[in-house]
Length: 133
View 1 (cartoon, rainbow, N blue to C red):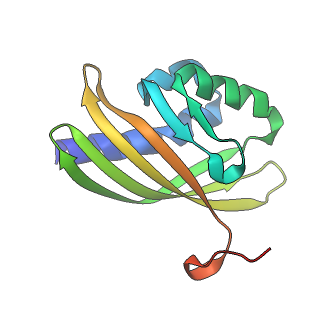
View 2: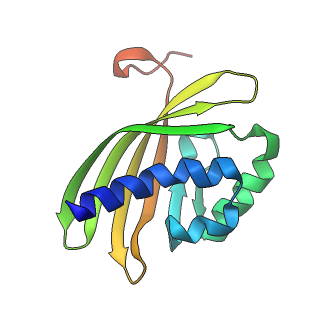
């Protein structure tokens, strides 16, 4: 139960740190060699904590002002390894919103639980459908 709480709080902390601009604290969320896959948004995969930091800074005002996570489901896949799926809502400065699905691989290491891989999938159509061009 303690591990489930720690992993859930880790996932939730992402929004708090990113929205606060606390990019110097990303090591609290991610492994140093994290793969952050945002290919669904046309950006490919960002590698490493420094890569995530650089991508956030490059996006600048295009970043959401609010990252909100919900519906966290955890599945143990091995000793010190968990898969998580959760839903995310991004609120932009102009008030528009978007919905994503986060798919994470989370591992426990020397500094506790950290996300080692995150895939972010945009939700663009209801009921799991793929929108037609």
